[in-house]
Image 1 (spheres, rainbow, N blue to C red):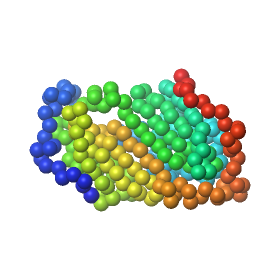
Image 2 (spheres, rainbow, N blue to C red; image 1 turned 90 degrees about the horizontal axis):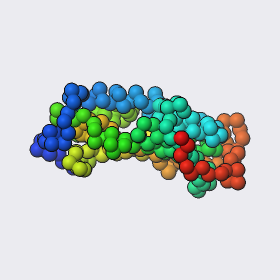
Image 3 (cartoon, rainbow, N blue to C red; image 1 turned 60 degrees about the horizontal axis):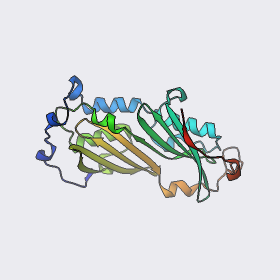
Image 4 (cartoon, rainbow, N blue to C red; image 1 turned 90 degrees about the vertical axis):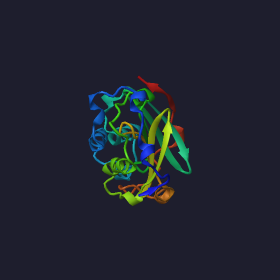
Length: 234
């Protein structure tokens, strides 16, 4: 494991009582927190594993994003989508809110793959997270990420510790199988509060001029057919 910042025992000792009154679940082990977080996602966390190679309709692209996030359309509170074109890629940007948490995806309409995805817990929810009896160590933070990405190893991770509004956070970054990952972990609560993943350029543009699995050139979407919807749908 590659650590950007050396952590000392003193740095990990926090005055939790001054931050918030911890409820009875405050001492929840990090492994249990990771299991709960993983249960809210699809079976495979990597966006690479959901690629089909087939052109998608808008509805199919939205369904792909929801499938990765682990939700059904009925569970979404607000949603918006918008078209974009970047270096020959025809992209549907999909954003949706479940509860107070926000998810953002970019879907390659022609090749049926997720280009990027991200999750952000709301500030209000973060500030009300129950605190553990002691803050996570960097190794425990790494374990949370490795539970999400079992094919990774500790030596793949770059970890940096920081403080924000009196709370301690870890930022964990890695590249695995042509996907760049980033995680923000609340060390006091032992919870992943945001993550993002994005295809590397090598993976993103490798199949730009390929054909889909039906043997047809991936060019079914045209800019003139798209009408941006830049508002959230209630």
